[in-house]
Image (cartoon, chains in turn cyan, blue):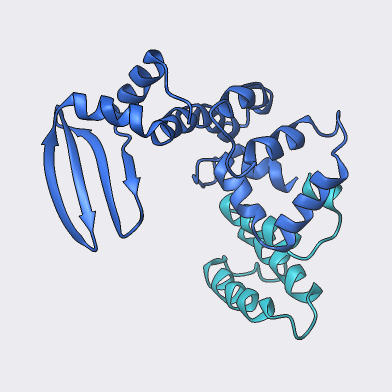
Amino acid sequence: MLLAIVGQVAGLHYLRSVFYRMAGDLTNAEAELTREVNGLPEDDRRRAHFQEMLVKLRSKAPPPIAGG
Amino acid sequence: MTLLSAAEVEEALLRMKEGASVQIGGSRCHSTYSFYQGQWRREDFDESATYESVVAESVILNLAESEPAAFRDLLRVARWNRFVEAFFAGELHAARALLPEACRYGDPNLEGETWAALLDWPATALQPQMVERLRRKVSGMTAYHLFMVAMGWKEGPRNSSARAAIR
């Protein structure tokens, strides 16, 4: 819904990641947060914060399925 | 300053009997009025020192007359919570219908106005200034609050509206 309204804006994938995490979908939560980090300029002050969140998210996520 | 009607005062006192409280004053020095174990109570907080006392209902009634805004907020929160219940359950049409009443006693952070526009979309296009407001909220990382206020700060896998938001 928000994507259709606001278009691609910094922070959108972070928000989607938050809601995926709330819905218990850690795989998509990680994917969205990774998109957010990758879309930020190298010197963006939010990058370190998001990367720290990504590490925490990965520590909670189930291990990837071998060969999957 | 608009005074409360007798019915509004009665409703506010009922909300307090259900557990709501009224705070008068600032963060470092304030008084909190509540109803607990069958008695009206006042807790004065002054730079971390607290003093508790039992007060008569007439004190609360006088306060409702002298500080109507604080009591009006009880009425606003009760109505907003009805919107939250519907929104959290994913009943978005019902939630939209409840918004005018939810904002009857104010919409201090314009969340009601914003949600009215969002829930009317796409049937009604958003005004450019509303789109800009949303873009600022997303890029400023405050859109999360907009959603959480509508969900009563509840989260969990059963949250229908959280699921709807990411579709």
